[in-house]
Image (cartoon, rainbow, N blue to C red; front, side, top):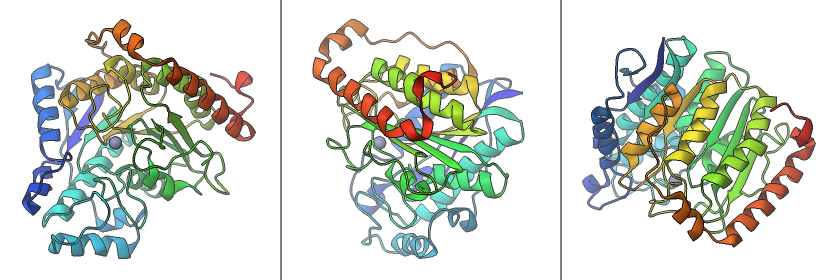
Length: 360
Ligand SMILES: [Zn+2]
């Protein structure tokens, strides 16, 4: 069995803000540097890690999450470059075809896992999706890629317990909006303190609504949080809740903007931090990882780390001097983190506690 199947939307370059006359950090160069890096990495072979083709999705796939009016709005915006469907979102004449192909790649990555062809899937797609809610969008996202996959897996593949984990620097507000009352889908988002970063949503107190209270989890990571804070959150809360929820599949919203070189955020994950969490997820569950944000030069390096973690290959040596990174971290960060961790544990206690007797 192939361990990891990769898909990517080959027409992604047709979604480009330059076609509308202005630059944007979310541009075709992002996937190009990832594919170039992976090609040179030597990771691709016919046994362990390989590419798969995908067909475009159907509008009915999108409608499992989004309203018909919103889909029509996106189509109208594609015809008129002066129209924008949301803040920091651009739509070009071919964008609708691009998103159908991107979602097709996401569904194919899910199907590779569901059919047993692969243990894990990795959809390298753009535009990203986790800020897109049922009838609105923001932050470079048009349709909610992870949510559409989750609903497909439920409606078409019959799954009853699906987890969506966000490790993008930005809160997964669109996904939250889509699933806040759906107890079939557990959403865990670890993101930079939303008081300091767009979309300024995703508070610890936000835990979903009935009948899914406790099924949406938001961890506010203080600015400058790094590998150790992420590991502690994963070990002490995320993994324990996942164990108890017992997902049949995990969808990972894997943005690369929590990385220490990211210009649009202020977190300190390194390749070790990404590898550890993804490796731990993939050692217990089938994972479909989706590209979300990330706007620096090391996207290719991090995509190779995702492939290594999913396929169980050892990580590359972390180029960051951990001592320097730790020395630069403010004591305030750890103090705020510990405070947030304890607030979140208390908030979730009625649903997932007590913490010390959960199997982990
Ligand atoms: Zn992001």
